[in-house]
Every structure is written in structure tokens, then in C-alpha cells.
Image (cartoon, rainbow, N blue to C red; front, side, top):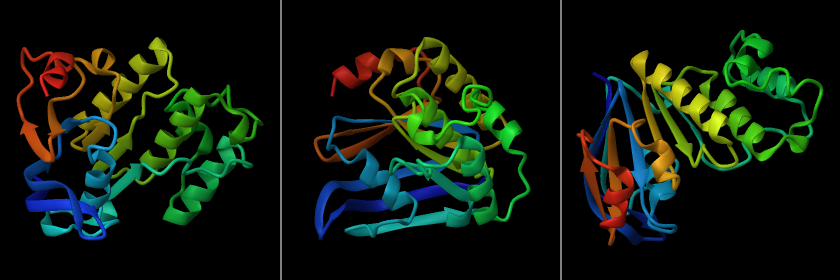
Length: 218
């Protein structure tokens, strides 16, 4: 099974660790929720696992996968604001060397009709989040990292996003999301990584666990 492993990992910037002694494993076929207060190191951990920044110490290894099989919606925006959703899909598809039908891709995240002919900068916050997700899904990554993907979504949008993420997991992929909407995400992730007090704890079985209570106990 493809996996990303962190061993004795310390993450941060300019040699100063934010989180230390991280030991965890991300496997395909799972939705993993990354929890922690603002500034705890969630985004830094994502970027380190993606190979975008160097760890302070320790190592990240990839088993039966590579960085080429990972995409992320972390640094917003990842789209071109003065292009339409369709044009953004065409640009991203050309970058990846893919033959993608823009309408099908946008329909997959529920914005094909609403985005018709409009520049991305004029989308609602929820539509922008869906466009980010659409672009991240284009190369069909084995590992998909999403930073606060529920921001700006109404209840129907959150339910639709959850359904999309479950379907993507069920195809044998791994989805890693960070979120502060703990009640809304309940029942979606299979496991979580809780960052607190400069440490990361991986909880691989959430059966009977209330995520909001788990976070409050930090």
C-alpha cells in the first residue's frame, strides 16, 4: 500500500522547530484530519510532507509513491483570478499534460453552471474553494492535501464536499485535510493527527470518538 512516513521529524523554519519528534504514517484509502490551533504547524507539516520545505531534522520517506503523485490546495489562491473556471481548468490541464473536459471537471465539484462565463475573482468564497479542489483533483493524485477546504461553504456545500472526499478515498487514495469546523467534519475522517504543545499525535481509529471533544482535550 502506498504510504508517506515521517520518522523523528521536526518541522519549522530557519532551523527553529515548531513541532518535534513526529512519527506517523499516511496510507492510501484513508481520510486524515489534521487538527491544531492556528500557528500550531498544520500547514508547515503538510508542506514538509509534500517536499516543499526542508525539515529541521528527521526524514520523510515515500513507499510505492512519489511527490509526483501528490497535489495540494494550500497556498490560496492556486487559480488565476482573472480567468474563468473553465479557462483555469484548461490551463492546469495543459500544465499537467492532461486531456480534461472542463465542464465535467467543474461539474464534479458542483460549480459548472454557477461559474459559467465569470472570472474566478468574482466567485463566492465557497465557489473559490470548490475551484481549488477541482484543480487539485485534475491529475488524480494518490495523496491530496487540502487546507481548510470547508471555508465559505454552506451546509449543502459541506455535505457535497464530504461526499466527494469519501468517493475519492474509496478509489484507493489518501486525503489529508485541516479544518476548524469540527462538528461539520464529524464522521468524515478515518483518523486524525492532533498537533498540540509542539508534538503530533496520530489517532488511527476514530470509532466512537467525537472530534470536537478530542480537540477540546488538547
